Length: 112
Image: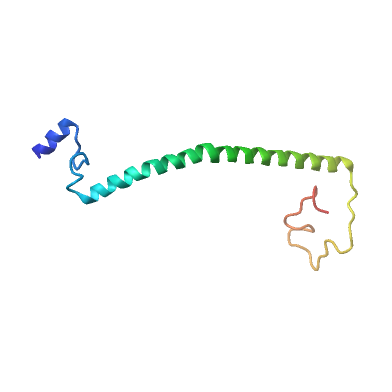
């Protein structure tokens, strides 16, 4: 117990790897794994910061531009006033839906 207190006073933690690497093969292996994992973790951190973040930003900008063009196209079609043709083979119903004439996902702006 006194040696633990003396070690703590010196700043060495109990079961520290500072003095027991040769005596404990498990601890030596853990230190080797940690030394090997350091550069690999740094590589993946750099990949995440310098590759993934810009790719996500570019993809987000692309998605926003596609969305804006699609909304402009829909607005153009809305103002142009295309006539909706009701063909006889569309909206055939053998029996009425319990919630009304239209389907559950009917959208009057898009569907006929």
